[in-house]
Length: 342
Image (cartoon, rainbow, N blue to C red; front, side):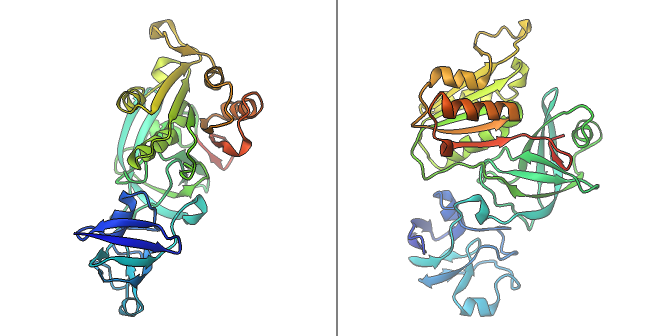
């Protein structure tokens, strides 16, 4: 049986089956409510039932007390509707709506996607979940107090593991360990999520996504999130790399483009080698965009990669191609003494 749920003060509405939790139903239909562990332990999803009846489910007593229940509160990750509902809850619409957390995580998987790119899967403790927006990043916390930042390559709906794409930086403090001594079941600590690189879902403008190297990771998350939400805005994805092997998951965007008519994929190589037998686009990836779209005044652009690529794209798109400055969103893979990607 399906029930009608209204969220105040936003007025947003969605349907929920009687056998699913309010949070599950909301996330399934693209409404992001605050949450943490998703199993009734942390209380981050606590909200008020203004009208209607719920079954509180498996909420732990310390997270939802009897006094909370008497006051009309429930945990949306556990509560199931028994009638139409009106609930009071702030929806997550921007990065600053999600608090950063420091958590331990166990390495579940290490797989080389290319000779110098490692895919790392991190598993959180059973009582924890990380709420984040597609495109955000986390900081791996090192023992000396330094941090190493990596974008999340998975979309929020696919959060069984946190997925990172880590490029080997020779001599790098962290990536040398990843490619030499680190192993499955090792424990890391991280803090996140961070960053303002996320999909502006209120816009209907077509999107140009520009990835350089492992900047594909957050772009991947954006595309998978948009597909999950049924977003039909046109997507033009450009992935720039040096050689063919640097397009380390090339088959994936090819599959997106083949399966979805609103997605176009253009790989671009800057330094193809004879063995690549490359017949596709060459040069700088942002220049390929400019050649295809000399007028970007009606677009949004999401760019992720090296500072040189991001800065060139920002400058030339907004000047030569008339892209409004407020429609350029970027995550620049910068390197510094305390927060870097090495």
